[in-house]
Image (cartoon, rainbow, N blue to C red; front, top):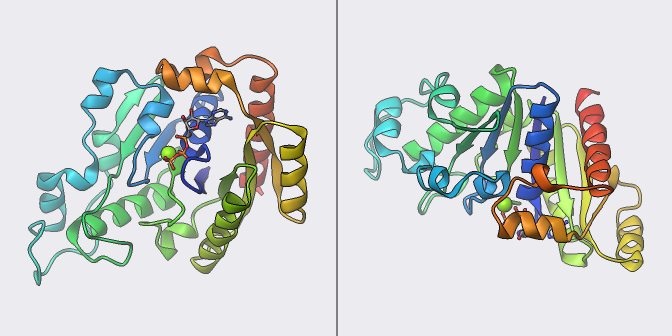
Length: 260
Ligand SMILES: Nc1ncnc2c1ncn2[C@@H]1O[C@H](COP(=O)(O)OP(=O)(O)OP(=O)(O)O)[C@@H](O)[C@H]1O
Ligand SMILES: [Mg+2]
């Protein structure tokens, strides 16, 4: 199962991606979580201990690895390099492991942008294509709204794009633009999750703003989620009812959509 999570900044993408990753481990799946957001915070959302987090070096900053695999020097222009670097072992070798979740942090490409043909970008795209098309793990991709690094070939291997929205016009508009972009590059299936729903008015807003969409339901604004963040704890360890049941319900729907 290959899932991509996206949405506007701060809506709760990493919180949702991390919780799904822990739930997938509980389901007995082999889980690879990939932080593809240049402003990476999936490790924190997963609850990785501080020391382990400090040891994480994003792949985009792994100069020796990039140069070895692409045959090109980072930050030198006009060189020839391999457009199909060997990346098959990277997920296995370079990921951190925490509570059964294997985590890869892609990192930001300086002065890059999605169309960039620099060695870093070529390596990251090749890696995503490899894990999405050729690995059989449960892959959970935490993306910013721009979907950088998600090329057409890779997009076609994504079973479901989950867009997280909060009750507000702007995040709903971002969801619409993510949907457009995702459609353009060939993502086949798309669903929306509401998050930080704090009132009946919020709930009603999302219901009406998302009418006609595949809306899987809204997760409440939660003090437990805030606490998990403040105290650097995996949410899955401290989550209580009814929030757990609500998360599990959304997770079941996600799996059902992804399997269609
Ligand atoms: N349902 C919720 N209730 C309360 N706080 C929440 C909820 N979901 C997420 N948060 C908090 O909102 C903040 C942003 O969440 P998170 O980092 O998951 O969002 P994000 O979309 O990944 O952000 P970014 O765009 O910066 O990567 C965090 O402090 C998180 O703890
Ligand atoms: Mg995030």
